[in-house]
Amino acid sequence: MAFGISDELLGTFVPIAVYWLYSGLYILLDGFDKYRLHTRAEEAEKNVVSRSSVVKGVLLQQAVQVIVSLLLFMVVKDDTAVAPKQPSILVIATQFAVAMFVMDTWQYFMHRYMHINKFLYKHIHSKHHSLIVPYAFGALYNHPAEGLILDTIGGVLSFLISGMTPRTSIFFFSFATIKTVDDHCGLWLPGNILHVFFRNNSAYHDVHHQLYGNKYNFSQPFFTTWDKILGTHMPYSLENRKEGGFEAKPIKRD
Image (tube, rainbow, N blue to C red; front, side):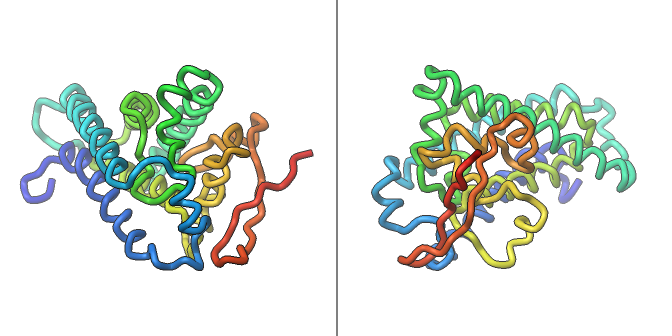
């Protein structure tokens, strides 16, 4: 507990603050055209929703996320009002790994089904794909139903199945938030440490947002495992664009 604020409240609101702060860093880098995966002209032409609408959509989803999170913590909270003791680093690392696996698995299959089911894609998931050229603070721009099913319920399952404490969840969901924002940032920055550890990155997810790739690269936010196992992995090559910046070009599948 910090400054009299419970771990449950921190676990609810810190990831939201992280979302906007980390997105803000990418806004500061918006002028770095030499690192963009799409030109500004492409963004203006292909994206059919305004940035102000994206902000409103994300805030709505985060409001739903707050309500579900607070209800969850009310259910699992210990009535003794004593914060549970933190386990060893090894146990926490194991809980992180389990939570990452659960989140990846849930999001892969729910995400893929939203593409397979024409009704769900047309009326729900297509809202997220209105950002053909993704950018950082649009990472959670979804239909409220998708935000609830894909992100919020996925987070609840990760928390419950891994057995992590509310304090551990502050760090896990903050990290998951950073990873999600990074995957949608639309930039390929040199020295990005997340690219060292994860093949599921901004270029990988950018392929999925393009018309040629929307039946591939469903995995998010951590690993590409399920795509590779189930044959939905689309490899790509990162090439310099003559106008400046980079382009993730799909490699023909055998």
